Image (cartoon, rainbow, N blue to C red; front, side, top):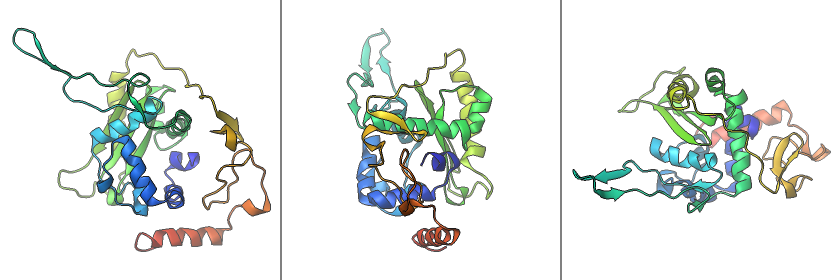
Length: 267
């Protein structure tokens, strides 16, 4: 999953969604502030087929940025009258204090670690090159026919979303991507927003997360008790290869890919 996110190999996400069930996923995403009815419970959910706003996306990614807490965004902080009297003031919940935890600390840590690798060695590496920081994380996104280009990214203290598209949806161009269009916008904003802001040290793993086989995993799964594969044939971190978990042959891999693509209406 780590490598797939970094390189935008989306069939892995489709396999995971197929394994957990689309109804479960539709219910689960409401934790992040998304509307279930705008994300039909079908496999294309894994490819971003639902409808979201940049503000919703910012709220969702803040869960990864702050370690697993839901913090609702707001647009107006304070309203005062001509005499300076406060008429209204927003007092948002704070992560780690009074905000609701919606994601287990261990899951949040591992997800954050994977999203950091998207910047370190994946489709968002431009951010690392231009900003020269190690506390960046995020994900590029491109919808079908390049109608929308996204980059959702963050540091532990700041989340920003860049989106590019037309008011009346149409393709931005067959060669356009989130990494090519939205990411440079995000980098431009962050270059100003993070100017003079010290880099935040690497997040420490919470209790119950260990390194096994070169990757982070839950302590109870380190010996191979977790899900070993979702169709790729890769062994679970820390678990030795066995005859039951050999990589697929090219023919089998191509056949599986065809079956997945057929679920979307054609190969």
